[in-house]
Image (cartoon, rainbow, N blue to C red; front, top):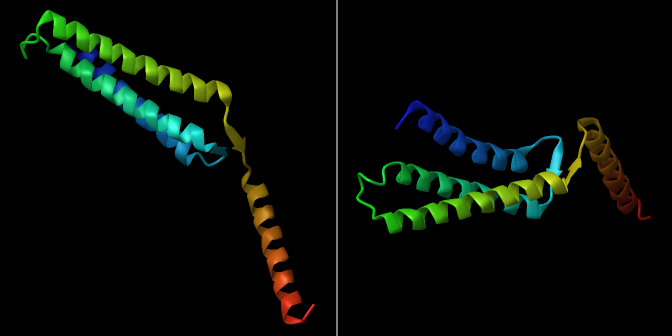
Amino acid sequence: MTSQDVVLLAVGVIFPIIFAALVFFHRSRVYATWAKVASIIFCIACLGGESLQLLLLRWRSIHLTPQKYYDLVGVRDLLFGLGLGFMVSILLARPYEKTNGARQKDSNLKERVAQSSSELGEKNGV
């Protein structure tokens, strides 16, 4: 295994995890539910593809037959294609709403004012 293989494996494992985490925990964008599910599927597919890639780098030492090797190559490519499709879908659809910290504070303030005024109305018998 060369240093290039190690770098590609590391990037291939880290990128899907970071992408899924950004979809879930981005502060200024609230993603739709389907995008969160798609990001999890993307992460699982890419991690599965990367684990197969690691296995395929040592296919001779684990005594795989050429037929099994090509079967695993097909599954690896299927997983990477699935992951790429979900990532492109999320990036092109832009399934998020941009939020601003000041706007969130204003909306929270409006909600609290409305809630306190309704509570005052109930206390006064209105």
